[in-house]
Structure formats: C-alpha cells, structure tokens
Image (cartoon, rainbow, N blue to C red):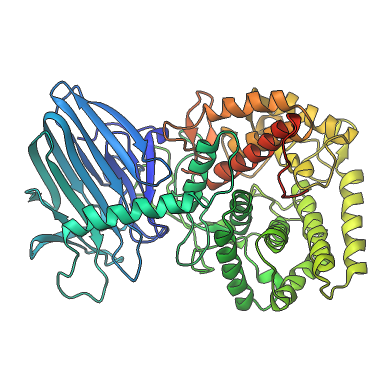
Length: 614
C-alpha cells in the first residue's frame, strides 16, 4: 500500500507514557519504538518507506477520503474513512501500562455506514529494520520474534483472519454497517513462556474505557481556563505523552533522525531527557496546574543528584531512566526521511558542557518550591552544590543552548541562565530561611549581570549579541525579559528586540540565528525557523505591552500547527514541519506564550494576573 513519504504534519501521536507511535493520516503506523521511548523500532517507514516497516489498515477503494481527529481531551486518535460505498473509522490508542501489564497498541475498526472492504498490511521490521524475524502460531495469536540483538517478542491478536507471507501479516475483509474488527499488537515479557495475553475484549472494552477516562480525568486537573484552551490542552497532552510514567522524566521529542531541512545532515536523536527541555516542560505543567508531573520530575532529579560525586557530573541529557551513556551511531542502512541521511541514534552532545542547564533546573525548583510544595533541606544541600559550581564556573565557555559542534564560546544565553541559577537560589534561601553563603552568591550574581550588560552589548549592532565579542544575533536573547533579567522597557532591550525583528523575524516566524550572516555552529547546511523562538518572540511582545501585535502573531502561529494541533521543531520556507516530531520545546513555549498573552489581555480588560512570577 505504501508508496511515497507522508508529510511530517500528517501524523498523529498515541502513547502510554512509556513509548509512542506515530499514525499517519492514512491510517499507517510508520513509527514505533517498542517498548520504551528509546527502544529499537519495530516500524520505521517514517525514515525509510521501503525498508522501515509499517502497519496500515485502510479501505481498498481508490477514492477514499481521510479525516483524523483526537477524542477531545484525550490521547485517543480516530481516523475516519469516506468512500462512495460507506463510512468507517479506525480508533488507535495505547493502554496505560499498569501493574506490569504488557505494552500494547490497540486498533479498533468500525463501519458506520454502508459496506466497505478493508486491507491490512502489518510488516514488522525489528531492531531499526536491522533484524529478520519469524512468525509462530500461538494458541490463537501470532507470535513475532526478532532474530536481532534486541530479542524483541510481540504478539498479534485479532478477530479477523490473517495470512502470513514471508514474515508479513496480511488481510482483506468486507464489513457491513455496524460491524467491528479489532487488532492488538502487544509486547511479550521476557519471562513469559507461553501465551498469556489478555482477551481481545479486554482491550476493546475495559482498556479503551480506562484510557479515555484516564486522559479526561488528567485534563480536568488543569487550572487554565483562558483563551485558546483547546490548543493549550492539546500541547499539555502532547507533553504528557512524552513524559515517563515510570520515571517522571520527559523526552525532548518522540522521534529520531527527522531532518531540520530536507536533504540536510542535521538529523538528531531527541528521545532523551534534556535537563533544559524537561525543566521548561515542568514549568509549563506548573503554569497549568499539573503539580504531580513537576513533583515526579523533582524525584528524578534527586536520584540524579545521588548518582553524582560533584556538580560537574550533571549531564545536559540522560536516558529516561537516568542512564548516562548515549553514544551516537549512524543507521546507514536507512535512507532517511525523503532521503535525508544520515539517520542517527544516540546523541554525542551528551558529553558537552552546557552551563545554562543549572539555571533552568534551579528556576524550575524555585517555581515548584513556591507553587508546588516546599523542597526539603536535604535536597537544598544538594542544590547548593550546583549553585557553588555556577559561582566558580560562570566564566567558562561552553557549547550553548543550540549545542554547537565546533568551538566552545562564552554564549550570552549561558550567562543569562547562570544569572538565573544564582538569582533563584538566593530567592529560595530567603523564602525558606535556608543556610546559604548569600554574600558570595549575590556578588557572583551581580558580576554576571554587569558582564552581560556591558560586554555582550554591541554598539555596532545596537543589540545584545550571541557570544562575547560577536556581531551575530541570536534569538535565544529573547529569554532575557522572560526570566526577568531585563525589563521590557530597558532601552538596550528594546533596541535588541528591534534588531532581532529586522534580522531574524519574518512575520511570526523566527530563525534562531542566521548562518548566512556569520553565525557558525560547526555544521553544514541551513535550517528552518525555530518555533520555540517564535513563541518567545510573541511572549516578549506581550510583556512589552504590544498585546494586539502579540495576539495576531500567536494566532498566526496556531495556523502552522498540524491538523491535530501538533508541532515539530521547525517550520520550513513552504510552511512545512521540519525536525523531530512532536517537539516538546515548541509545545511548552506555546503554553507559556498563551498563558502570558491571556494574562495581558485579561489585565487590559481588568482581569486578574497569573500568580506565577508576580
């Protein structure tokens, strides 16, 4: 059935907070790491339509039209089919894995009207399509066993007849109005010796009802009742889908290897927990009233502290379970999305020094301590080790927020976040009367402020620049008012915003920096606009009192979302989604911009202010 690549924007995400699957608008599961976010895939046609493997169920009629939607306030995805013969729908979801129940994908097919003939192709390609497999009959189910290093086993259960041809599962059925068919792919735990899978009815009745109820109960915890609530909540659900139910850590994106520009080499694995991204995600959860997620992440951080001997042991990224070794390798047997290789798994950036992560982490802890619950003194003592590290090392060059792969520099963003680390630690100490060397911290905080204000200002560019001595602009400067280092009314900030608008902004779209104007990151090729920067820009406009302009650009950015309200990392010159998908950075920045803009609009109309950061 598969022919050409499906645009990134034409995918929906389902998951169980252990792993995720991407389902195309044409009812094909083209991406599925099984059974953890960073596990080897069993379907990866997203990155190689010929070799990658997929699982597609759709009408055989050549004039089929498709429509895809989520059940409101849930992670349950529906794909509807319309043909001259009738109408049907496919419901896809992943039940929550509780009490060691198996990881599974459930697909329920229903004919709503008329008569329809469906075809199914399930073509597993285990271990990133590196391994062969065998299919065995097993008491009414089909056991699929990988012969690769992953040793994965999963079983296929259905109430429809299926043929096995060279390891692929194929079927064709004609169904009448009101009839249903069900399909389940479930992982087999290593300790199982025989078929102990649940009955199909469990998945279609109990698991379905439990999954819908879970998502709706979770969504109702949100305290946000402002404008654009549907988009804000969809972003929150997307972030939740990428947050580990077991560990509390959040991955940066669901996928690996998707290009930042078609044909380019900027194709990274984002299925790991960046301290920066996860901290920002917890801030987004806190702003919406989801306290439990922030608390769980804090517990994950406490475990990382126990694993460290010294503050410099804090890595910028980990596996969801805290594993520290994330060696990068190239899957050279996969051609890449639309031929955009190399396809990488692992991420060599885990070995980089990035000073800013201390600021983002301590800022999130500050917010949790203020709005989520008091931190313990034992944890405070661990935290002071990080603060002292920043005092001693804030002048050190690093690789920066954008993880440049050439020389280290003294990046503006890193200095700003070093200031944040000290400022928030001082606030926590004062709020809680914790013991702390406040005089030393205050001296370092003020020294960083003066260094940024005096040494990162370019008279030539009339703006704060990317790194010390540069003339290059960087959209990460947009965080300066957002973290309250500078007032939106500061003349130097106003000049910087004007320079960013003139050089990096096109309508509502914002480049993080311009490689054509001297910015160098050690990589070849170009890239699209960065959506997190677009939402930062909008939030800045709102804070600066340009509320109508901010609203216009925000609502234009909503128009770049997929049909399901999802965003990748970047937006290309033709409005296409680029980079890994869905991207946590983009969705958390959308939430932050929406909350800030809603607050500004409500204040303008005499409403109440948001309690965070007031």
